[in-house]
Image 1: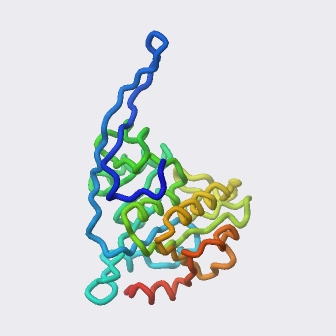
Image 2 (image 1 turned 30 degrees about the horizontal axis):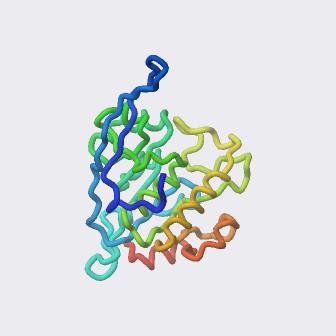
Image 3 (image 1 turned 180 degrees about the horizontal axis):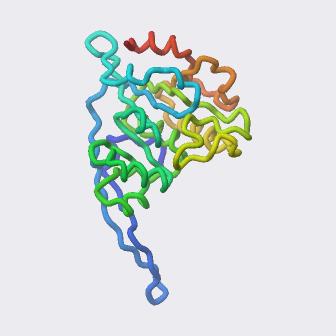
Length: 244
């Protein structure tokens, strides 16, 4: 894995279908997967939609076909995670866990939408999914943020990105639904916080905007050292990118 990596530098990569040992030697069945998403027609603005409760009362429909700014100069693309597809179709969806990928594929959503996943899931569901560049292994919210930065967006808004303030409560809007743990399942946000910090540092020329009506309550201390991240409330976000 190399960070930062952008779409301009990426041509594709090999994925491994099968590994075996023959006469003491490792052999692999590999397939070249070329870059199959050309995402160059954008204005540099992206909204990454997490599934934390802080976005619960935000109308995602405002983001559909958004054309904010003079002559649509702030038109945003949307990146989302897992069960978001049940309520809203982002421009790009990341489905990460095997159970969630199975659900998305079975629903038929992947037939007409771009769904990114791992090499393992591409092998399992041929011609249904798109490979996450470099086959990076992070949590879904971090992967969606990585894809936005990879696609050369320079202003990335993060909404619904809530850390786990209470380790005994799963702060996810879909907790307790199919393919999710229940609301009282212990959860940890340490890896997520570190993954996001790695992205903030790697993509130092990108402005990351944390959107939350009570940002100081859920903003990880480690992120305070990042000079390329700032905070907005949801009303400020709506005004800044000219929603509605």
